[in-house]
Image (cartoon, rainbow, N blue to C red):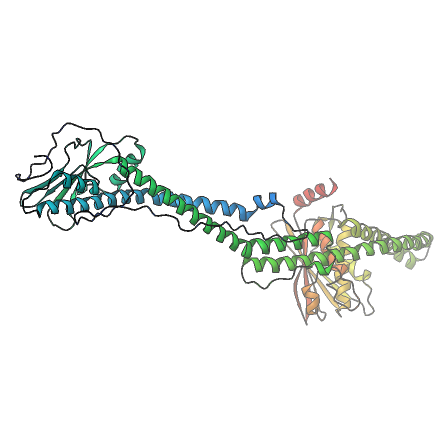
Length: 535
């Protein structure tokens, strides 16, 4: 009889519905279950948002030259991170949504199986083993199913069905399957638009060994799943906006504001680098921002000192220009006198005259090249091949010394080097003169040739360089070894050597003396350097 039945069916034989298929008319579903005849059904309920999120747009905009425009805010690092944060949070929520909606579908089935099991227990507890049709329809409506079947381990089957129960279109056995299959079926349910009749088989919640079969419509399930997806989307938007706002505020406080402060300091410093008050004051932070501030402060101070030094060099160039003009007039007179001495018959005069001529020529060249150096840096050089030992032998007579300076050229005869002879003489003379000023009475020149590199060591027996001079040895105006010195001599000497592709370095300086090392590259490298210098 329709409405109820209780029969013993042999185990292993499944129940099939033979009634003709009927159309299903959707009934309004409020998402809740009614409690009728002592049957309590728990179904997934739709939660409402009880609070609305208010947007907080941090506006950390300072007045002044560093005030960012709206376009700069959109292109700023914090705005990009804000967008990326929202994107990645939403992406994470999408990845979480797929297994979550599959779990929601399983919970939906479990709740309906539990409700169907309770409904079948009402039939089993009936004294007559049957229920009238109105009560059956009421129970099935509260369960949300067309039919409920309870299979007990002893073979008893209790079935509640309606007179127009449709045939199932698809069967879902919850005792089988795995997570990927559940996810696939959940996506299929969301993608469909028709209303299939589902046959759902699952274990009875409180009766071990028993199984429950339900005949459910798919449309209510899809509706609840879409509602669940909307709630997840709303929650994801709230979480992403909240997270993005917190990240934005944190970046503004920890990164953007300090970087804007550094940028403003750089802008102000660029406008007037020589103003010492425009140097950034480090905040004392111990992270990367604090280190950047400290390094920027050091850089600004270094640039300021370099500009001050450049200004002093410019003033020096002006002074050298005036001195060069006056000295040329004096040397012109000396040239006339020396020309007269050249015709003298006295042997001593004829012996000294060539050295006097060379000294005058070097004085004129020195003024001209010093002027060029103060204007443009190291002067161009003209390399030539010459014997190094005769050049060293000219150092002793050229050094201004009251007690005389013993120059020991421990250099073999015939050591041919290729360099600018006048500039090399100027460098060696400067080193020898410094040795005399340091109290030296003996200077030893030694050479070594290795891999086409000529190394010339100049060692003296003076009292050495003071610590301050060693720390700033080749810096103009800082590396002077004597009181009142400018420190230009060694700076110019190194510049002259580097202009030829070599170098000048300090090897050692103690109370027993000082040793400098001068290096020159091979002839091939010198030719390439000379070509670049004259190009």
